[in-house]
Image 1 (tube, rainbow, N blue to C red):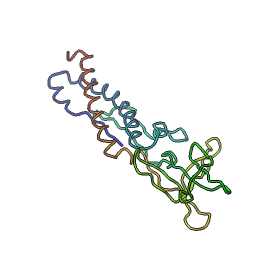
Image 2: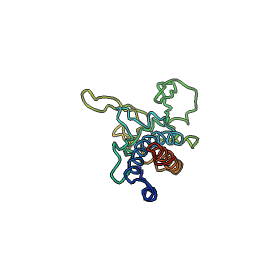
Image 3: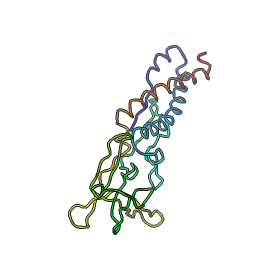
Image 4: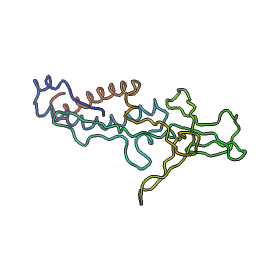
Amino acid sequence: MLRIEVKGLKEAMANLSPSKVEKAARSALNRVKNQAKTEAVRTMSRTWNISQGNLQRKSSGRDRIHVSGFVGSDLTAHIYFMAGGISLTYFGATELRFRGNTLVKINRKVGKAVRSKREDLGVKVQLLRGGKTARLRGFLAAVAYGKNGAQGYHLGVFARHGKQRTPIYERKMISVATMIRKPEVIEPLQKFIVQKFDERFAHELKRQGMTK
């Protein structure tokens, strides 16, 4: 969760109408909280190897990031980053496997024959843009989820617990709640929020005729 709060209002209220200052701050915060969500998604996508669309929504259509619907009486707003993991396939995880005598490349977009070396077999994934590509022991598989009208398939990177075909487990995933805490993401986002709030607050004060 990211908490956005307003500071320094006492100084403004000392010289201007307190009710109007609070109204201006509330209006500015309402706008900035949505801008902050958009910028958070944009910043995370620049750092992590995942598209903005897949960051914002699950395959079920539900949001991974929520903005509080109101500004609190203490002039705070919240952006919630869900803890549920994101499949490694959204980070470009690609598997090389044999189908018969043919070596096939498989990921979310393709499943085609390729030329490669036997030692390249397995799954490769790059979590950070421009970062190292990790090689994982496992395979891509689609598993069913949901019931009745909410049924669908989830594509993930799986591995076996032992030498038998089952049971299998999904390789560790990452969540937006973890991604937002990376310094390369949270630090520029905090600066963005401060800048945008100051700009909008000044605009709201001027709009209400309290400043020129």
